[in-house]
Amino acid sequence: MTKTYLVYKNHYLRDYMDKTVYRGDQNPNKIYTEMVQMSIESAKKHLKGDWELVFFEDEYENYQEMIIEHHFRLFEMWKREPCHIIDMDSDTLWHRDIELSKFHSIKCLSTLGWTASCVYYPHEMSEKLWEMSHKQIKKWDKWADEQELYVSLMKAQKVRYKKGDGTTIVGQYYPKAKNILFEAHECTIDDISHEEIEQPLIHFHGTRDLEDRLAMMKKVRDDANGLRTF
Image 1 (cartoon, rainbow, N blue to C red):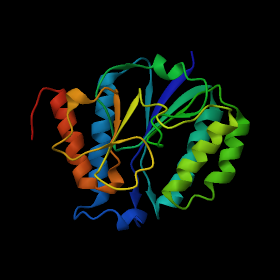
Image 2: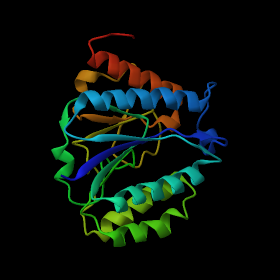
Image 3: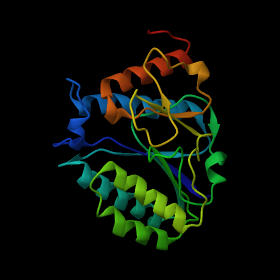
Image 4: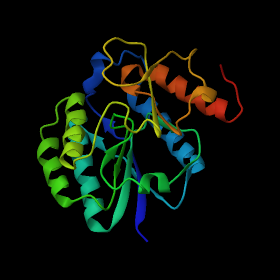
């Protein structure tokens, strides 16, 4: 039976590239640690099926170094044995039950919900696609580069990639902002409600307003558990 790995990372970065958008007073590493712990616990509760957790925790100079290294780690995992990989960001929360078979029915590399908060690498994808991604990931410099990488990979697979793809699995909850380039729900902590979120997995876009995103994650988690903290 082909294994499925659920991969999380929580690295210490000496230089936060997103300091122009992160305006909080707390240490970002501390907040991301709390986020990833919540996300993993929610996966244990809601992701149904036979999967194995893989957790990476290291120290890097910056985002560029981390993103590139993580990419090649995933490739090494995929190359080592036949496996499916679900690569997760820490600012995500599983809040409704979903069967692992939902992922296994996707036979190609897929970003679920438009951003790279949850990327599925099935064992069926070709090594040529990995080789293509190796060249592009080494040029990574800003967040838009990551989106362009996955769009180009999906196009190379002749997958129809359009606005809204994957939204049955991943819901996007984004701070109030202008010029949002993808389908998402703009909201504040007063707006968000567990009952109104249909998708089983939520991406909160932590780098935009980290402390606020953490509070939103806690609210949705506690609402789903029948608790009210706000």
